[in-house]
Image: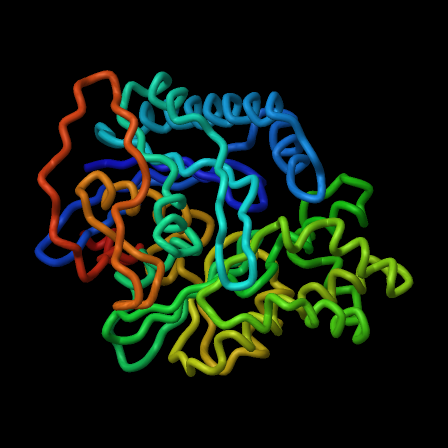
Length: 392
């Protein structure tokens, strides 16, 4: 079946779209990535979404308006994706925009995503899978990083542990053993603090440090780096999650004030060092044979160089393995929606620590809802590389 996924990450920097042809082949799910791209938010909507993050306060009226407008925006993008798809999609996946993720130490107390799926159904006429995090949280998980589900199926096998690294607003890793056993968690900030600093440095003209140009001109401020590394999140044992509620603009502003407001280039260089250090420290004890990176942070050459310098394993991008670095998250949501549609339970926890659950909720489309018979849980995900696609 062809699945359309439309999602936005913690950076709220656009709507990532994926059109994926998924099929069951024995014990594997085969995923052919037909297309991925990013669409901008309607004017002003991303800024309003970021404006409700703590320590800000908001109103029920604004949350209701955002829930509607995000749903309408996703619906419009999904309808366009359905129209341009090379085939006939039968399912849309819309995980929604996370606006709050409440974590207390190593426990997730709740999570909230906005984007009313009824608008997506109305725009496309297709059934929609949404709200994919809440059931995992209710079952004792963190609802994040759900990338562990894809990574466990995709990277199992081989001669040793492999690590999938996503550099979105928050950095998360999945350590995948050869037998598929997986430990996944959020290591800390990736782009969220870098984007705040780039915006402040440019008086709002830039939403990110393009190619790491400002960080390349700066020098690490040791005292500021030590203060950043002292955050208690880094001392927690995985699996743990975090978000922009914790690593907020206000958090960064407070530390910069304590350290005399260093030059912005130096701030950005220090934040690059923070992400590279915390990711490397998290990964190193697992002695992976390689690290496969994806997400917007892979476009930051300075960050990638800092990671390569600190990691004890080869660093490459998911492009090499058939998943576009900017599209992996959209493919993840398509896969999760496919598994939900087929009644396959999944878990973000290490094997044996918590029973898996079927995630999300399904909103029927215009036609009567007819679900397929449940599938046995797959053990592998097969994604052809670009070279394999061309040869086929």
